[in-house]
Image (cartoon, rainbow, N blue to C red; front, side, top):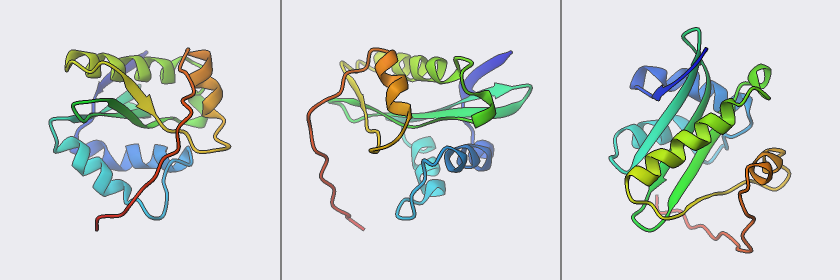
Length: 136
């Protein structure tokens, strides 16, 4: 049975392992810092999916007061196709809704096969470009 729960600091290595297994990490983003910042901020959360006490999926959600954002949705490859990603995504949206968030968005890198999942779940592609600038 899959249990969803908020992540704790002790879940960091398992969560990061999932992010790496799913190809979600990038050399310019330090995943341990991302994990710690999310846990240490009231406007963000990380939820994990457990199967027999082993973490098999994660999602991070944040609310900037204007929009909600989904990050690091990942499920271990051998657990895909079981509905875990959908449950994590729904739980993250519930967390955002409880905070008054009117709309949630996520970014998917070109070529990421997860885009098909979002389309099946009625997420809509937005015709925008994302620009970034490092502050540190």
